[in-house]
Image 1 (cartoon, rainbow, N blue to C red):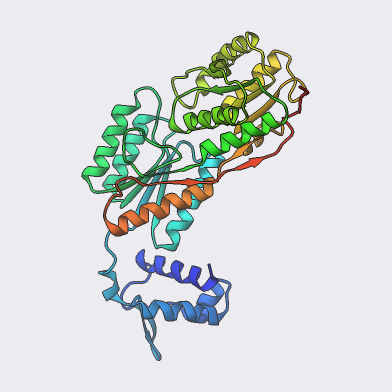
Image 2: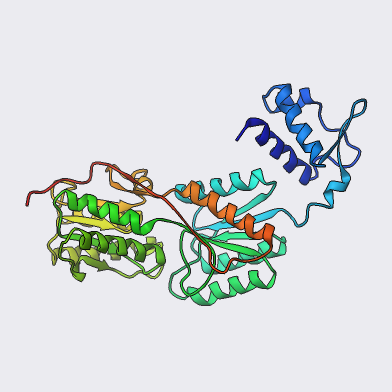
Length: 364
């Protein structure tokens, strides 16, 4: 986007927030140029368009002022709320940046919070957002034990108040809730084909839940075997259920169960459904004296996030969370502008494979 357009949208946002009230002269083009570290000509272009759109009134002698009449054209609070599992988690922080950058260009403000994977806290945050009269909500619904009742209360609350909402990262089964996610099936398929291409035929797929994203990754995993004309067995699927998606409090127990299962199985590679499961797999393999990649190859989803925390350089899928945040915001604004919900609307963003140092080839 051209610099003058960015400046124009930022000035518009400041007008919406009420930074300049009726009768208060805006800074001169030269003052704006210093503030935005830009040229006067660039500022003039932005101001001219804002005046043409009715936001500003220009007087050659008195200066530039906000057009009071424009205030009535802006309905609503111009607020959108987004709730994610953890703002301190880099992947969710990246998604929020995508949301905020998109909203900013349309004159909206973002209210963001971390629900800390607590259903009661999420419900409280949503109620607070409703009280603040937000126009839209972006959230990542919980899929842990007991989630259905609270999720339904949240969705009903938003619907009752006419607030548009989007599901980010996962699909809520048996609903028509609009969503934005990544290409989990294709990503897992390509990652599995990478292992198969290196000679691996006995690959464990390790998961801890049946949420939509993980089930889609399992589908891609299976399809890669079928398309490679390899025999697929359900024994490749290692499902160790946890109470919560984030199983930090159950991590040690999870590793112990995983170690026992690994002892009973023959495999040359491991595919973990997310980065936390990958950490558990790494510990379990170390406890069993398996070396990565000399003895066992390892790939995972959200490899970039994992590699920030560990010494290994793990190969895996990196999801486009910034783009997903942008798409979620764009879809939400479209719903707000048109004041209607699509019957079914889903958008899938393309992920990438990061090649690390955790995969070795094996001979036939």
